[in-house]
Length: 590
Image 1 (cartoon, rainbow, N blue to C red):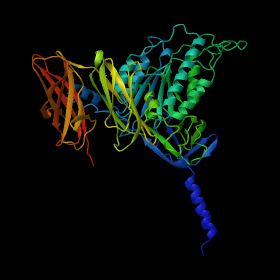
Image 2: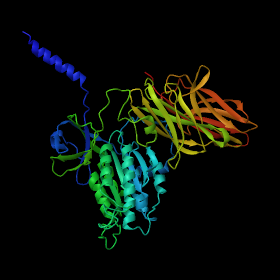
Image 3: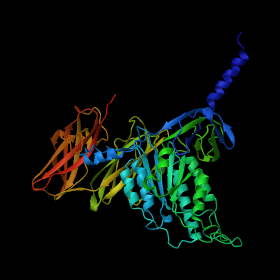
């Protein structure tokens, strides 16, 4: 006989469960290494104890995440340098849709802490680190104490290397203890603000913090007097620790090993020892101190080893996890001769909203535009095309699209950021559903970073970056725009970032100036200097006073999927040919 009361109770519990919001599984990442920093495999959930605010948490699952590291050997480098290099096509567009996992590293340089002429050990160590990174590893370079992003997250390690080569120390030769405290506080505040922008990122980030010395907590006046403007409390250090926990940022505090300690450091205001702040920062973040020693390029080898793999533990959820509060974290491994690397603070963020129309805790498109952090939830593609503009300006047309063409967008915009980190121009789509999603911005000639950010109608956000050379290409008396690829729709040119089943691709460029005898042809090749697989002429027409456009169609239906170099070859009588290129990506469409 059926127990009616039991059935009613089960139905009540089931109905109640369906009304309760689902609990997100909290996730904790940490490292387990040997004494030399080499990751240790074979750790199981039974080996690990995780405590949050002193309470032991049950572990649902534990997995090891490996990041393959394939540094170039000396033999390979010599072979590459003595062999003719075949240049593949450059990337066809910027995207945050990463197809393989790599590390995310932030190189933070406190320029005000290094004296001029003492930067070489820093450069050598950074060079050694960059030379051994995987091509999939992304690096961001930020300068302190003002938090200026010199290079956003990129896999172009050569670009980071060039920027570091220009780094110069700004520290005063006669810095006092109070001035060191003021400098330290500015640097900590900028670091915490920068880490706040990383809290939306997927996966852990390793922060390599270069400093020439930091003050520890101290007064800048005797205890009998009121604090002055350079008072340094523990609060800025604590804020960095909390921000690092929320951003899943692992710290390496890198410093010279020959910093001079002033004589008579025990003043009534506090110690002037430049090591004290370094020890304090490493302590509150759970970070590791690494000296810039005579090891030179190998000074940061431990960073490479420790960050090559880490563990991720999924915990049994608790309804108090998602209150956004920073909590203490402690992790122990019941294995001899291993070191557990973890951050002493953790925050799981706020709970996901019940309604998708107002996603609290998720960044808006504008917030993502003004940030330098990666936002991978909404996968995007983005690129830009440069053409002639009025009054000596150039027109940069930003083009963006979701990787999933069926994704409905709620907002989309773009900014162009110059070399100083300043926003030079911006665009916001009035109708994010309009296709193509493109907008024009006027800027002075130069090199910029285009950042596109968008949210979909459910609140997911994404941002993609791409470098833009907003300069015209000279060809004798002509000034040529960049090459734009697209298709014909209703007799109009529609730009495209990626191609599939299209039988032809349209190519167009603009130029100004006059040439007596001019010919422009279009070629498609596998490599930058490879033989042409397809050749076709471009037709030239006047579109304004001293303003022309060249357009043509190239058959691509018979090309197999892959990346191709599209070359517009401009030939003027008496002048060497000039090429303007663009990468065409063709994919398999199911």
